[in-house]
Image 1 (cartoon, chains in turn blue, green):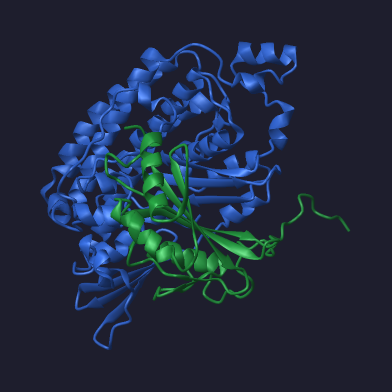
Image 2 (image 1 turned 60 degrees about the vertical axis):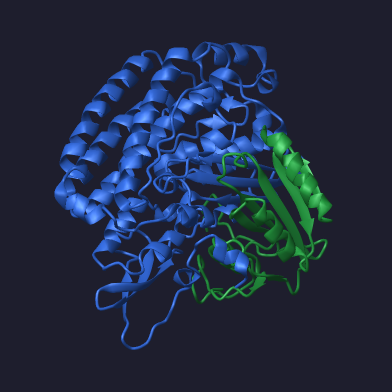
Length: 406
Length: 159
């Protein structure tokens, strides 16, 4: 190894999967384990101390990049949102941004606010899902049932807004598909107040529980320099003290017009990762309130596409607030060239690179999901810990197997 | 400093080292040859881009090349809006590139995926095993253009 590599403070030997001799015990977890989801870990142990973890992630491989290359680009929106079905709008927002950059379309302001609104609702639901799973991994069923029950509040809000519980397909190139329904602001306000109350209960029952603290504090510590060198994303990164968020780095949706903070922690352990999520939920609710207060009036689809509609249909779209796709949408031609976009999901930053060659289908559509970038942490954090710490580390990473396994 | 200004600064510095660089919006696009890839990567790392956002391969069968695209990213506050895109071309029948895991440690899984999906061999990566595909997979690398996805018809044929 060159001297360059040693500056960053990453311990390379932890990244290489090892076979071990006869004294190591090889334990397969999953792919059907209640905690592991659709993936398998090959854990090598000496006594009950973890020597190495080899994550074997390919159990739901859905070939999304390849399938997207064989379809009209508009069809890849409902295809790719199934990657992270619990956070489906944030997933597709990146794709839509990349397509918009290629096609040179900008969404109108109202559409940008609506996108932000759904993104934040999705982020809260995604964090609650992650916290529930983390709870059940510590055998804390109350946390699991509470978080999953409260997630329903946000799913219902999303359904009210988009018409679909999970797969919203809300953003389309140039705008969004539906306008804000009547009376939405009141319902959202109610949900926010309810959630604020519930977060206090979560703190009392789960995060301040001495058992939970004992399992989480000082476990799976990721140092600041390591987090940056390993390219970790999302709350896992911010829990190590790096103030980075794609919402700040990339100018998308209405984030530059809204005020919010990016919560960070310095410890970098499992507890910090969970607490960052709690604070992010609070920030998301703050953003939702701001949006509902200052959402501008106007069209929800770019003029460029509205003009393609026949006049009677244009009136109908304006009146009902629901977009009927202009015929050209089925055959949008991607010009030659490429576009990159980064968007912050609940789990972290998602990266898209779309290459067009003048046809209706993308020549190459590359997506790197946050869970795929975080999967390296299983290898990196677990060695040296006792086996009982493994579920605690896994739960705190908020890892979503089907997302890594695009 | 805005992302665009910063990108042009990065572009300038890479040009001084003799690389073909071009800043498009906030993405600095650099072309490299397999021989100079390592030198370029270390230079980009020294500028503060300390991890990769992605490695991908693009298959161009008509030119007989596979293009490997690296996107380097930084969490530093002054660099966070900028991405450095490195493109390297390798011959399609024997694509071999040096591994960059000691420059960017998180390349370890990304290189493994590119090896599996496009058949690009990264010399020096000790971990080139199947990642997403089943371990007994045989056949061409699936993201090459000559691999066709067999799709089932929409309608069931009635005999």
